[in-house]
Image (cartoon, rainbow, N blue to C red; front, side, top):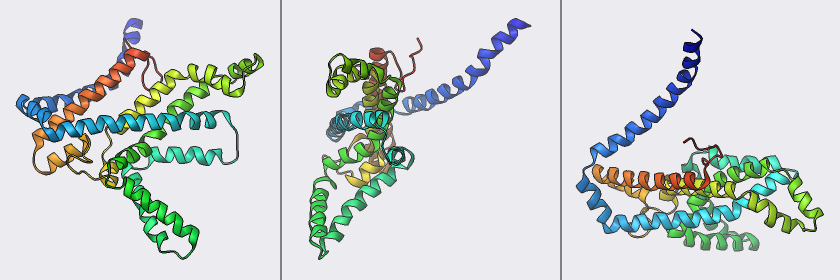
Amino acid sequence: MQRMKIKSFPIFFSIPLALLTGAIACIIAADVAYVHRSDIISTLLSKDIITSMLLTLATSAVTTLISVIIAVPSAYALSRFKFPGAIVLDTLIDLLIVVPVLVVGVSILVFFRMGFLLETSRFLPALLIGKAIQWLGDVFIYQRAGIVLAQFFCSVPFAVRVIKSTFDDMSPRTEHVAQTLGCTKWQAFFRVSLPLARQGIFAGAVLAWARAFGLFGPISIVAGAVRQKTEVLSTSIFLEISIGQLETGIALSLLMVAIASAILLLFRVVSGKTLFGGAVQT
């Protein structure tokens, strides 16, 4: 009787896991079963799709780099410094995670629209700000730079959260010890804290990349989906399905799943951890 109770304990908790992972495997298997091999090959050889894939990989990489450059000092400041209004700044970062990504895209578009309104002002500072915003709008709206901008706002909060949790788990005492041994605050950060946080930074970078890689809504709003110019894989899927090319859309979906899976598996092999710091089960 006791043996049956012991066995029922892990079974009880494993059933939801089996159902969840089984459901995920089923929807991926359905895509694989639906699309023909010829559709996959023709899709991968398409000039438009090759351009879309290269643009997706390039913009995701640039977005990841910018996100990490901004996220590391931001996460460190939120983790180590106590200042008035910190809770407001912390909430604003979480806001980008909670609100629908379409809201982010629309808000970016509205911000640049404000440039046209301010440009008509008779107040000189407002006029200059309006011209500057309008110039930035020409740089980003319906341009490739707009892809990176949309990806950045949707990716950077995830990087900040993961990296901040890494700094939170590190005792400030290590930096204090380094300073007593002759290091400045800058040296203590770059020689002690930053190396110790490298896995967390790596995880934040991968999470930012994953978010940027699969983004659709804000990109279509800010940069559009112009063939050979601002079309990325996610918008390619939408365009193909919207014109009835379901097989091509599914083939592109499988391509994105394959690329994302390869990156996530590589991260687990290299770091031995999941994106959120948990140990990898072997």
